[in-house]
Length: 593
Image (tube, rainbow, N blue to C red; front, side, top):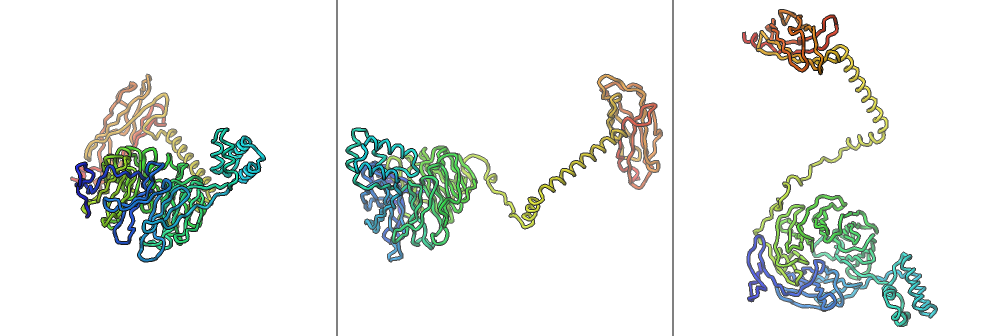
C-alpha cells in the first residue's frame, strides 16, 4: 500500500486510519476545480501504474488545463482552449504497447491526446441551416434590406421556424440598433454555419468486453443527438436522436453485438437507447431533474434534485427510493471486482459522502469540504483508491483497507432490511397463460354465468330465511307482538344433565304472558319428567332474563348423543314462537360406570 506521510506543518498531507479507509493524502490548496465527468484513472504509459487525469475548469473563463497526477505530485499539464465538458480514456487500436488515449470534450470538438501529446482533433458535423435565415442573410449581403428589417425578419423566423437560428443570428438579435450595421458588414460575406456543442461523453467497447479491448467514443450534443464514433478513423458510426438535450450518460455492452445507452436529459427524463434503434426504447419519468446517474449491474441508480436516490430496472420499473439528508453534488460507482462488490458513492452538500448498496446505507465518509467530483479505482498500484476534489479546490485521496468489511444491513435508521426483500413470485406457467387467454376470449359468457349463479344463491338464501321465519326455526321470535329471545345451557357430565333455558322479552314496554315450553327428543336416548310445561312466571317483563331449569336423563350406554328441540308456544296457537336445537354432550359418567 502506498501512503504519503505528512510533509509540512500546514497539514497538506496526512496519514491516519479512520474506520474502513486510510487517509492517504489531503491537499486543500491543490487548485483543482472539476466534476466527476472530467476525472479519470488510466495507465497512460503501460507500466501498470495508473495516473490521475483531471480536466481542470480553472476560473471558468481562463486557465483551463489538462492535468496528470502521479501519486501526490503533478506530473504534467496541457492548456485547454475551452471549458472541458467530459474526459474519458480509451484504447484506439491493438498496437503495442497498449497505452490508452485521452479524449477531452470541449465545445464542438474532441481533443485526443496520445502519450500526453495532442494527437487528433474531431469536430462535430455541422447542423442544417434554416433556409429562410439563409435567404434573409443573402438579401442583407446584396444590400436589399437594412439592418432593422433584417432584425424584424429574423425575429419572425425564430418564432415560427422548426430549425433553430444560427449563433450569428442570435447574437445579431441581441445587439443594440447602433451596433447592427457594423455587425452585418463584418459577417455578411461569411457563410452561415450552425454548430452544436458536446454536453457529455463516454466509451463503448467495439466488439469485445475485455478490459483492454478497443472502445468507441459516445457523445451527446446540445442538438439532442447521440453519436457513436469509430475509434481509429473518428467517423460517425451511428447517430441517434433524443427528445431533449442529454446531460449525463451511462453506456454498457459492445457496439458490434448489443449495447444499451442510458441518458439523463434536460427535460427531467431518462431514456434508454439500444442497437439498431434511432429513437429511445424506454423512458423513465422522474418527479425532479436528475443530478447523478450510475449503473449497478442491471439496475440504474439516479440522484434527483429533490434530495432522493432512486433505483430503476433497465426497462424503467421503479425499485426503491431513499431520502437523503442534503442535496446531491456528485455520484460515482465503487467497483471492486476482486471482492465482487459494487456500490454507489454519493457526494452530498453537507460535506459527506454516502456509500449505498441497493437502498441500504453501508458507510458514511466525512469530508472537510463539499465534494464536487468522485473517482474510485486503481491509482498507482493500489486497487481500492477513492479520489475526491472539493468545492474549494482541494484534493482528497483515501485507500480502502484490505480488512474492511461492509455489512449489507442498513446503517441508517428506518424499517428493517427484511421489508425490502422482494417476494419470490413464481413464473407464469403454460396453464396460467392458457387460462388467461380463455378468460379473455370468453369474458362475456363467464360474467353472465357468474351473475346467474349469484342471483340463484341470493334466491336460495332468501327462501331459506323466509322458511325459517314462517316455521319459527330461529332462537329469536319474528313476531312483533311477542318478541322473545332464548338460549340454552347444558351442565353436568352425565348421565344426568341440568338444562337451563334463559328466556328474555325484547320488547320495549309490552309484557308477554301465558307461555308454554315443549321438548322433542328421542325417547330411547333421553328421558324427562315432563316434556311439556307452562312457564312458571306468568308475566315476562321487558329486558329481564328468566332462567327455567329442568333435568334430562341419558338412557344409552353406547356413548352417543342427539339433539333436543325446544319450542316456546303461546296458548291457543299451534305454531311455535321460537325454536332452539340443543346439541347434547356425550354422557361421560355413564361411560366411566
